[in-house]
Image 1 (cartoon, rainbow, N blue to C red):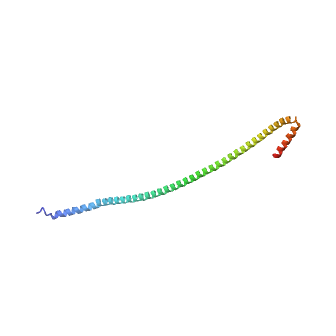
Image 2 (cartoon, rainbow, N blue to C red; image 1 turned 90 degrees about the vertical axis):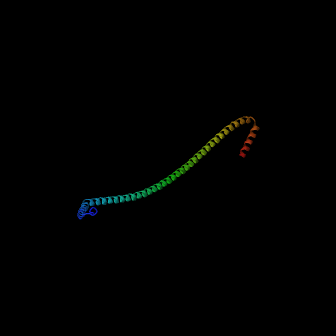
Image 3 (cartoon, one colour; image 1 turned 60 degrees about the horizontal axis):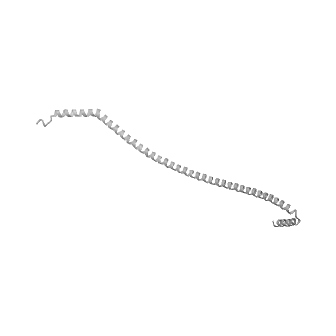
Length: 164
């Protein structure tokens, strides 16, 4: 039965060697292992905090980008509105200028027509006067030959002058 029951000396030496092994492991192995685990835990915690900060910064940047985009859209809308107003003003000014120019041209054309009409009337009057004189000369030459015809002519001219 000795095989099943350990001897006291064996148990003593086993306990002593196990205790010595635990002391050596505690002094040389546990501290570095625990320190490595603590360092790893700290680095993971720092990485998580950095990730959280990065996430917050990304959210801030996203909101800033949205604000900038909204401001840019508002600025674009304002510039487009101003451009439309300027375009409408330019078109309005051009229409007014065209109307003024058309009025000036119409007035100049009317004045030119009046001048040409007056010149034509003057020319017609001069032509009529010249023809009248020529006709009168011819009539006078024929009329002066006869005294009765002269009196009739004078009477006819006086009647014409009184009518006009």
